[in-house]
Image (cartoon, rainbow, N blue to C red; front, top):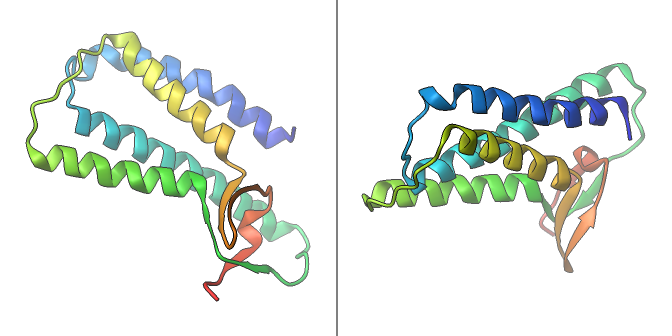
Length: 146
């Protein structure tokens, strides 16, 4: 486990604790669409911050030759994008679905989403053939559809 991974792992409970502490200021009965949006955007933000860190770190490291070409999609981005779309659909539909969420529920939501993001950060959906692939360096992949 790298230093950055240990740091990210340590930040997960800190983020959950911060959400729990802010829970009294957050809605007590948010809609399902709102929760989907919050969770999906949090997942996408976590991936964005990790990717920006990797890109910044790569600036100082020597380049590793030619990037690979592959028809694929990052699982974290796919789940986050799907969650945003589902959240917008549920929110836009006007359905009155609400979930009563105590203050600790917000901490549980944030901690769960961040833990999920950490768990799936290296997974890529390869399209030909369709399968899940663990790739620590999937920033080096150039997406090609042929």
